[in-house]
Image (cartoon, rainbow, N blue to C red):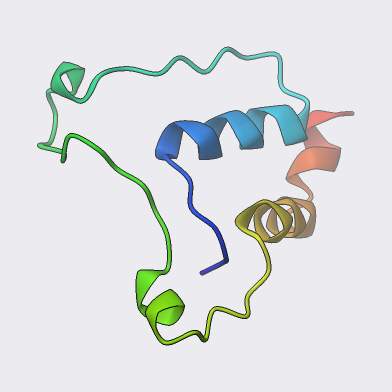
Length: 79
């Protein structure tokens, strides 16, 4: 969990950019998903901690960047 909110599209774009991938991330409308039903608007955030004023976590971008580096994903892709 991290601070802030993001859609799955924003997270995918961030990963592609941080990893230096030459890939296009295209957003699609929820109704285009046929495999599993989805809500019409998805934003991931840690609402419970926010409501308790306990969301002292780092921003999701910083956390995800650190995670990708730990996996050596960014270094692997950029070789």
